[in-house]
Image: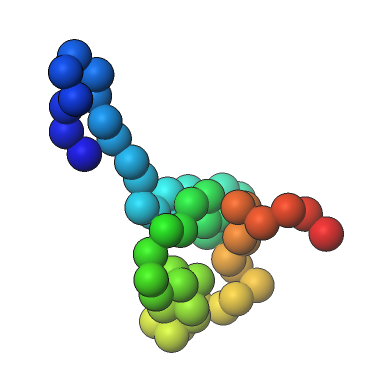
Length: 56
């Protein structure tokens, strides 16, 4: 993150949205899987959408 010459360099590790009362994980580049951390905090897995995965 920062600047390279006149170009801004920016990367997102985690991108999460709430859509229709669900948690949509758009990007997860962390070592710990954020979905697992949310489940460990008590959020039911059925309320979490892994949007970065190809739909089945």
